Image 1: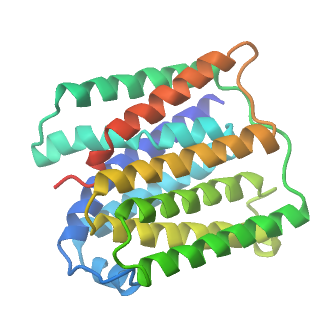
Image 2: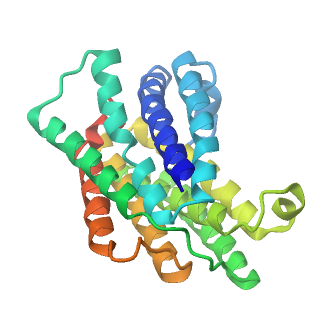
Length: 273
């Protein structure tokens, strides 16, 4: 469990610093109308965005390990406090100034992480049946289709809507990785959860990138954090047998709320300008 917590923390740092680079890179390319996959092709030529994406890939490796060893609610809460890292990185790299509210939010994040670490138990032993894995793939496809429809047909849709859809897709990704019985090639090729993970992560990444180019990034990032933490946490607790240490339910709940609440308060750092 200790290594799992360390892996989640490293993923959090990687994601937080990556956000600064990606935000700068996204603003340097031509704005896309709707959600256009060609936007990602333009971003490949932006060095800050590429650097941020490489950090994301490194964070993903640690995130995958954490998802396989810790309860979903613990991993998702820790990883999504990367906005506190983003805020601190923005102070150093972009010379931004933290307000009193920002400092209080960072303190809440740190306190929440400490409580989560204290209360975290072992991951549950339950998993999804074959039919439930296909259901998970179906959810990923439906969410991706809705996201494409909203992003390209309703082009004036508020960025919070795109952020929420991206958050739900990233949440499906976390659940998919958790329920995979093995990361061996043989299991990955034949398991519907693998394809749910691919569809949800690729689509979620594309839509959050599009949200970075639209207004109200604070709202988009807030919606992303809520979607990416709450749904997987509930699935882990209700369906996969996740739990806190015995007698630490209240501590875990307070830690989760502090960590996520602090991240929401720092959501404007999802795209520092």
